[in-house]
Image 1 (cartoon, rainbow, N blue to C red):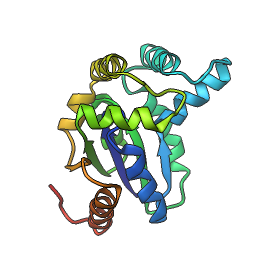
Image 2: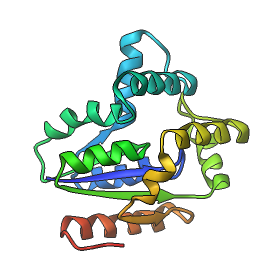
Image 3: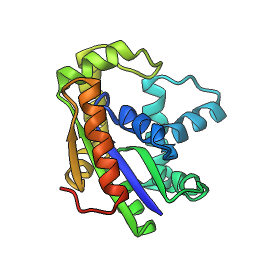
Length: 185
């Protein structure tokens, strides 16, 4: 099984990359859904604060790779030659996936702070940040989990500053190359 991990800052386009993969018939495991499930089990609302606190609690209890550990069974139950994991936030998660799955590739999705803030303000999800201070704080929190280190570990980087069509074309080309097991950099 080829496992493609996607890492990037909030609003960079990880979800869009995943949506493109889904359109190509690739099953998606969203690590944020693991947190959302834990919030639901605890009877808590899906807010940025609660998502961050739950992530912190899980990592304190299980280690920095907690979300990877909780995602592995969801990946393994997929009946597909290729599975995409959306939402990697740290280097410990990358290490866990790389150890568990022989054929693991990590894609970093990058976009500027201003681009990401604009997207988050437009997206309207309950856990989204709606101002620059909030996004900066969220970036700091996620960098504390090793997000920057994880992005540095990526096998390839895709920049998402243009149109949706441009990003979609780049994403589809990259996914096809990975499916053919070509080296990309």
